[in-house]
Length: 350
Image 1 (cartoon, rainbow, N blue to C red):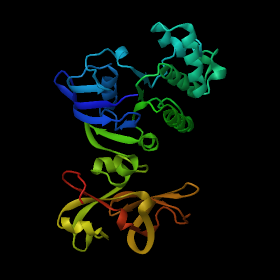
Image 2: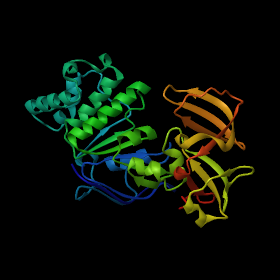
Image 3: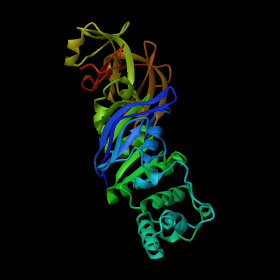
Image 4: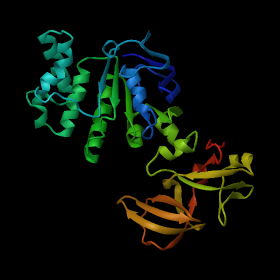
């Protein structure tokens, strides 16, 4: 296991800059998730850590060693890709032990390491099978096993679950997290799926346009996003945003006044976005009128899409509701959970 340190890391493709001076440290044994929309630079950053992309500027360290110019094979890392990249003509055991064989390990060592990894991943009974005889989840476990047998200092995962169906993704998500808890190996995981990030990470690095927007524990990012981008990206369904002006009497839209937290008085007169998560809306007889567009019963809760003065928002309510599209209801936000973001910069206010 090892710490990973990125100091002012940048990446250019000719005159095009894709990574702009990334700085952060990953602690020994930590599970860090790089998350962001397509094209934000997360996979490029992971590939630079892996040695599959050259680093234009900055310093990358794994442990105490600077690795900028080291080949991938000399960095003591193991990577699991989106595609399983298994050799179709090799058995599960041969696929898992291939990297050790390539490094000149003895047959007894390879057999011992493969059996150890297979036991962790519940692949014991599949070692004589070929990839074509496996399910998608089993193939992904084999790819993980191939990484585990090397006993690296750092695991790198590049969107490993994106080829799996929704139900299997949930299962594999839990298996990867459980694997990390067993091995405690430093892990860097890339995904565009913020639910994966929230459920798996010790810390999340939110990337946008090749820059870091915020770093923090999942619930810290959820409860106190640094800006409107993070607020809208972390959480499912996404946070609602309503544009208006901060006044002494409340948050003023054209014909609606929303309650404000006390800290908002420091920003009276500013135009802003009022952010509220769907679960922090409630029905209230003296609330704001909202036109119902869609009602989606989810069993334990009901998701309602509404419109307030032309802005579409989503509410999640624990109770079951009887109204239908076209109804007008009245709702209130939980003011203690309200967020304000500057209209011009998107930064959090207060």
